[in-house]
Figure 1: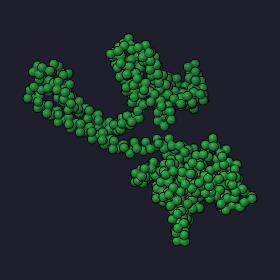
Figure 2: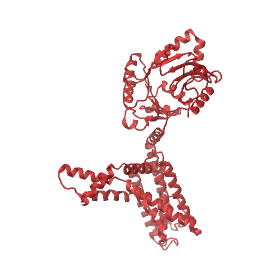
Figure 3: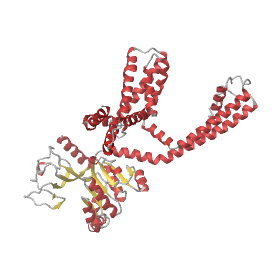
Figure 4: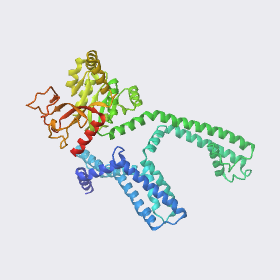
Length: 525
């Protein structure tokens, strides 16, 4: 009967969308640092903890009013109890244990082992109950039982709950954990020296020193001395005691130096990992950004332009020196392999505008184009350092392939024939002036949607229209350039109709362009 009931409940919960969504929500809220609402929950819990400790301190000299009493006993305690129960619930999935045993017993043709299942469920829950944070959570609830005033001491454990909600403290503790063996060894040595020092001073100064009444006083003095604090409430009065004091002070200085070096080395070793984790968290939170693969001179130029346009972007490269250089220039850069699944999962590809592949190796560019095009349908812009590789990179998945050498040759020939126009164009594209060339997309329901080119007063807008990129060809007018299934009309006729999705290529002052875009977006809402 118990066996059937367990299997029925586990099966029902396994297929219940409401149950699974609820558990997933609370697990993300309590444990997932990347969940957008977790930081608000953490701040809320920190404020609750601090308010309850404030009430404890206030209650020492003052009597609690009815409102504070109700808040402390019912509100704060209820929140802590509910949180404890939810954490107990989400710690593991009991239904998985039941279904695994049911599947295994059916496969092997044996009876369902109810005792084994209940034992495993109990051990898993006990594992949570005995964990340090769970013990702190439980001790933080106990002060609510006011008749036993000694339990109010546990109110101070509520301060330890703050550790759960402060990521920096958790990072610090995780760093110390890497030096667990060294720190435990040091602590044992300090304990041993403290005990020896206490025993020696007790032997020499008991009944001689009026401030040492028992062995505890001796241990207290030894610990205070070895820590180099020296309150002065107990001072040695014999020559032997003073000699011992000198040795303990020297030992204390050595222990402090040793512990400092251990912690410093732990931070040095984990510093890069902590930095990478911080950048990964930032990358996960990015929205509407550009992904740049590989750091090169071209990357530097692209990144500077994006930065000047206040666009969000992240650079990913495997070379630590290049990542360091990118970071020093103020770019968000991550050392990772973009072809690995765990790296790809860091980014929300729905929020990526475009992907740039800008390494100096065409083989790498081809491989990255192939990998990323199979993972995402976002437009990929790649460079081909050798024009013979352009077709390969394009077939690998890059929508646009740019050859820097060809562009450099075109600019050089332009400079030879038209040096003045070259200087002007260079000034525009290198952001040396307030004038720039930009693309403006026609948004649906905006004030230029379904309007003729001639109906828009570009002169009044302080803009010059270079051309229009149409989604659909216009039979009445011949287009100048066709690429990527779109049609470009240079110096467009006034009778060309603008539609949502079309792109205007304009030149003008940065302020005029930004203001025009702002009005366009506002009118489309």
